[in-house]
Image (cartoon, rainbow, N blue to C red; front, top):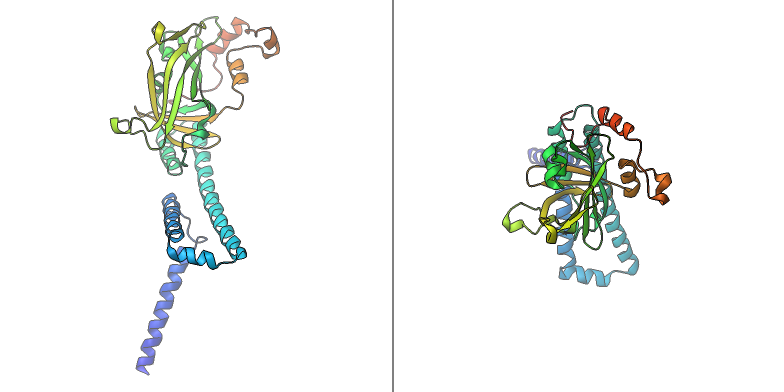
Length: 316
């Protein structure tokens, strides 16, 4: 009887341990962290690759019917969709938290940095950066000097302030960075453009010699200033390359980190021509006539009472 009791106690103990472990690992009872999701995805890929490359898998697949193979493929697709849905749910929550801070009355730069670092954990594989193609508008930057180093630097001139900034990448490898600047006085806004080529290679920039060719690199070889005067290397323009690290990107949001500690958040711009026309105070109803400029008095009034906070006005 004593021996039977010991065996019964042992079985009961093992059952309790198994039940507790199962409860802990049940997804509905434990919310996976970003590290859990990345580890699970990596382990799953490793296990599947090992399985597909094993001799046993080849023999099993040969002996499976077409119906069984289709079921297996369907199960793999469902699992990938579930993993993608979990990642999308997490990134959506982080992006909501990010833009809540960006649009807040008083921004918490530390919290914004924390959210950006969390988003970086979900950065997708970009290949050659095709998802970067298109037009982007600056939504936030953590340091005012960052926009001058990233752009033309003309916004530092006396009586000049950057109103908005855009960057455009096309499929042919061309890049255009556009600044719209406000000039003090009864003058319309002006547009400065940097033009050149862009490349993207997987891997963090690192900002050192060994990692010089990785990340996002924009090499500017020409500029068009607010007077529509073009300068290039032959007329004194200093060719330069701006390196940045793509921390996160999706169809709507782009996060870049720069070498000097800059953190930049960009939003997809769907109609760049219309937005530039608005910022330059062009009358779009007279577009066929070459555009127009609003009353200079209105321009002065807007300078005195600016509407809205700009992305780089992080101190407000």
